[in-house]
Length: 125
Image 1 (cartoon, one colour):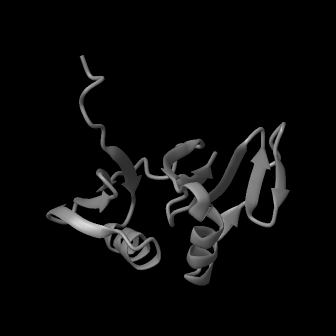
Image 2 (image 1 turned 120 degrees about the horizontal axis):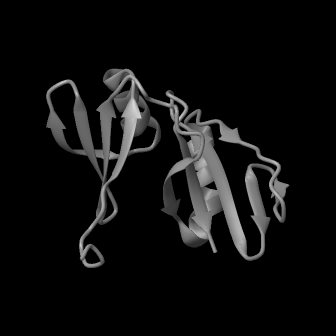
C-alpha cells in the first residue's frame, strides 16, 4: 500500500527561528514551504524534511534522520564542522572511531544533533 509512496522526515523543535538558523545556516537546506510560525518544510535531495514546533522536541533518543552521503562523508563532516556543527561520539559494539567518523562492518557514520537535541547522522556504506 505505501511501498510506492514517498515519505517525509518530520522533526520537532521548540523554537522555529533557532531551528531555521541551524537547518538553513549550518546544514544549507533550502525552504520548500512555510506554514506560519509553526512549520518549515525543507527540500533535501529528492525528499523533504519538515520541522515543526512541539513541546516534545528533542525527546527522541534515537536517530531521527539519516543522510546517505556516500564517498562524500569526510568532506561533509569537515564542512559542517567548519560551520560549528558538533559531532557526537558513541561507544557502539562493532564500531571503532577515527576522529568524528565511526566505522565497522562496511559502515561509516557520523552523528550530530540539532539545537533541540534531535539526533541526525551522515552515513556511507
